[in-house]
Length: 255
Ligand SMILES: Cc1cc2nc3c(=O)[nH]c(=O)nc-3n(C[C@H](O)[C@H](O)[C@H](O)COP(=O)(O)OP(=O)(O)OC[C@H]3O[C@@H](n4cnc5c(N)ncnc54)[C@H](O)[C@@H]3O)c2cc1C
Ligand code: FES
Image (tube, rainbow, N blue to C red; front, side, top):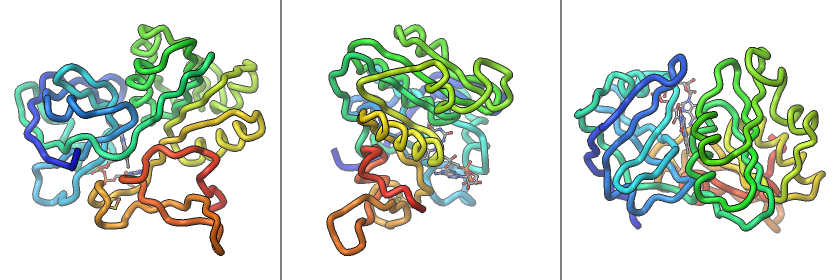
């Protein structure tokens, strides 16, 4: 479906952890064509924030989408003030999401504000599901994943909750094994997980996060290096259009 911008209606919004908000938007046109791992552009109303803000779709309902976002700057500060009944302009779902694979054990690895898209992903995966989630301090969406039958392991930088350390250290400490891995989170985590999966000889799909301009392939503001059989050894792909999900093994991680 080509990109459209629609007027959604907020039917719920609340803070689920310090400065992390969950917003439920009624937008049937978006929900109808959305797939796990895709994102939407959310358009701030303020004239001083020209660019839309890309936010992953955390859950897809019959005629709703749920977004979970951290408040970090002007755009998200505006979003946190919206109330039930307010309207919000959102694009239809953008990018290529996860390609769900049949596997005995699927492992979903999330870091911080990369955890939200794993909820819809967990709904789409059959078989045994394990989530390994890393946070600075406060975990989010643990119950949402557990309610879907996912066994959740938590790591925090501070050790406030769960294992003290990062998700890779936790995977190794617990001896977590899987047949297929999916991930979303900071680049440093995705790179380390891709290296680990390569060592273990298991595939991993990673959702890359780059700064974005347009969000649908026209500004070339979001390119990343993907391995290619050419002189340079890579080609530039647009995270917003060719991604955000790529195989970890196809990303050129060295810079
Ligand atoms: C495909 C995609 C999916 C995303 N999904 C989510 C999500 O589900 N939940 C969520 O909270 N955030 C998500 N983000 C990040 C989100 O888009 C930014 O946090 C948001 O645009 C910031 O807008 P702002 O106006 O509040 O802050 P700004 O004033 O624009 O920026 C504030 C700070 O955030 C940093 N920042 C802004 N955009 C990004 C980005 N794309 N990646 C890393 N750092 C950034 C800036 O460098 C700056 O330090 C996603 C980004 C992408 C590209
Ligand atoms: S953000 Fe404009 S091309 Fe990707």
